[in-house]
Image 1 (cartoon, rainbow over the protein chains, first blue to last red):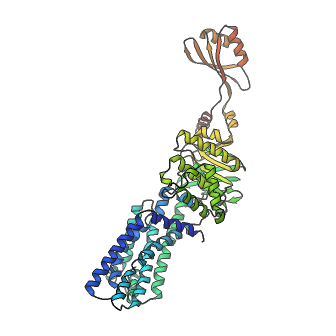
Image 2 (cartoon, each protein chain N blue to C red; image 1 turned 135 degrees about the vertical axis):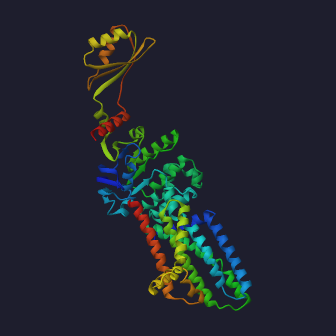
Image 3 (cartoon, one colour; image 1 turned 90 degrees about the vertical axis):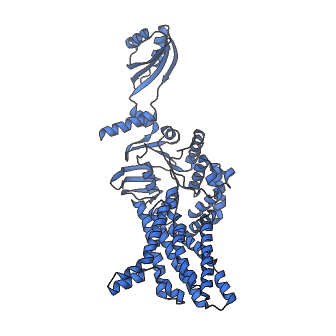
Length: 237
Length: 315
């Protein structure tokens, strides 16, 4: 487990050596600022619901881009031969990469901290929903990153990895729409509870439901686990 | 140090390795020789725990590669065919990263990095970005990486591929030096390389072992006759007649070239029959001059071709 750290550190460096982190971070923050101001001027309400509602869609693009190279690049460069023949377990490698990407995402989220500060300066916002929204949005994004990591384990081609994760995320996002065609009540419930966005609603209302936290954590766990299985299986072929 | 027993590997329906067994003693420099696609890389990937075998077993330094991969991994240094380097890292930070994933004690890391940079002579580029280095230097950096954990066994997959002749010589020299301290398993499709560096050689083709032996013994196995090359100044007719009549032990005589009164001949005799002296006397007695006379050794190339051909015929 302690061998996760060198991998984590290497990935963090890789993000900041290449322009990707800066560009993605920039676009994320600029659009966030835009959403924040437009929504604020339109609604005149001191909350961040509008911001997070819109930022979700940006994440749909940001997450695949941040994760696409994680495993596919190692395979392509042949550096996976170094990693897999070093005294590391598969999980050390996968988790190191996962945690590094989550950290980068967390940094991006922390940099949006000026929005609640601005609200606080000029009015008295209800801080409860804002805190819970940040928690929910962090968990939400972590699940996205897990899906991206999984997609990256499938192929050597980064673009293909990005497209796969985008597709997967879109399906998992919109899965609750299918409830309109499904007549059975229990099936409707399952579809709704599988959907990525449904679980974000209560966080935005200021409710921290353990069930929702559990959903996002287990969702991430499943995809990290799958990424691990795929990399392992590929070497067995 | 390395024991391989009945190793077989299938990629889907294709058999990449067919029941391979061999062993390498401590301190040996052992060569895997074969054409591209013969199974060299597959063998090495199994030994380094990169991929499992379909059946059979392999042990390195007493540990099974399948049962105890962590113990094996910490005792080997591996240089894959494509150097596993990150182009955007500097040499120092790359070696630092590898040292840490190879579990070298944090206190010793700097000293160790200094040491391997000294060995492979990359100190002058230690702060450069790997992506900006020449292919020869990259190969050295990759080799440095494999030495960081003081490996008992060094596994080098085609270490000189893609280098220019000067770099090739330098890397070979380096490997020879490393062979003094480590057990080395080296693969190559270049025969001269193997013959220069390795003590024993395993010839592999289409996943099957064709021969394992020292170079001398491999040559003996293929060489059935002594061969002599002679260049004589004189008359061809007299020479051929005299040799045929008076040279006992002559098995075969070929005239290779005849030009300006110079005759090039290849003469074959039974093994252990030395014809050099009688030839010299006969030529001189007939008032001709020998300009060149030398025994011809079978090269490893010929050994290789001959052995792979006979193996193909058997199939």
